[in-house]
Image 1 (tube, rainbow, N blue to C red):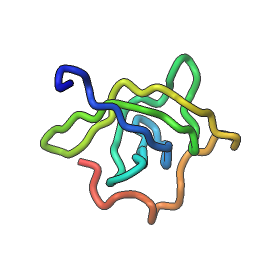
Image 2: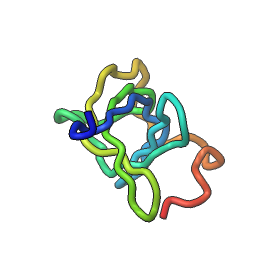
Image 3: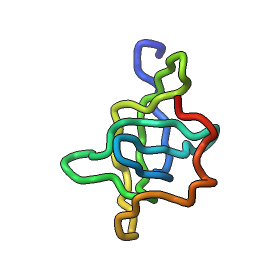
Length: 88
């Protein structure tokens, strides 16, 4: 049904102040500005599902829902070589 938003699953890969990078189950990473879900901060390794929207800058994740919490402690990022070449 085209009237329903398209939802995708993925994992939190990188958390930086003001944005988060999510690796979908397939395809390239997407960015979101949501750093908290349901009153708790996102953590690297959390499994989420989200709606994908598109802009001139690329894919953007909206309306995140955590489907599984990470077992690890909060992390702020992965090594810099894991970041995409351009975020905007």
